[in-house]
Length: 402
Image 1 (cartoon, rainbow, N blue to C red):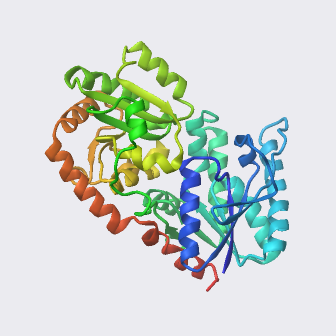
Image 2: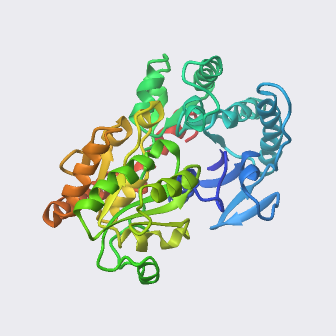
């Protein structure tokens, strides 16, 4: 069975979105499916390298749409993007002849997919990783409850009503859609997962260990994108308290994004330049070696609709690597982490609570070891990609494809 996936963006760009996508495709191929990928014009907005209408990445075919021009007026650019993407879907579908079109959020991908799917007589699955309206709040392009927010939410609900099946990232999103009167039996979770072959206990990356001067240190770390909702400013402030009582403690922030400049300034203002390491982004294949040098991972997400509803991928990677973690008690974390068993939860936004948990756990080797073992066993039992993606058989069958 051939599946045409419609993505916002993809590899070679690096993000949680692109890595989840790649793992889904790998798992689907193992299940006997034939995934083909098409990216929206949003991909070209962020990709500065060479452009081609089609390319092969890790053995998968990626079709590109190309950048679209910005137009004046509210929502005109989005409308043009959807028009261009729908034409591109039809063209690719005529060549590839997919059995099903599988559009991934945002809704800007789903609407063109529905147009094309209805014209071609092909079922359409819509997979939601986060609601577009909530992502827009975090990006600062709208506010919760605004006219644009409410209209976007209405459009999202309408698309879910018209799609043949809806896949979602976690139960928080499912509960929200059910409250909008989308039938529960139309919604199926495809949870985040890990590939145990890619993420398992290993030796530290010796080059980075020496370059970053981390040998013999107690390392508190974060590896990922520096989005505002991740709460990394709270982490820096909490680490200042840890640094006062744990002389060997170092904070390692690996990645980049919208908060990078602000975080560097905050580190400088707090006089933590010698205790906080910010090396920027690193090649994906070297991430396990960086996890291996970290003693404790921190995920201090702020409480907002997006973090309450959506589960992140990074805590699962940490567990698979056999690492202890401290995370805020937002809904997305509570769906993954059992306090005191697979990780430690603290009150979101509370810098004192975060400081206390980090200081306590970074100096308690026995307690960290217990959390590490329980977390690793749990993630390998419940959250490998092989287990979580099995839901696609059910989704596609309900959409009318056997």
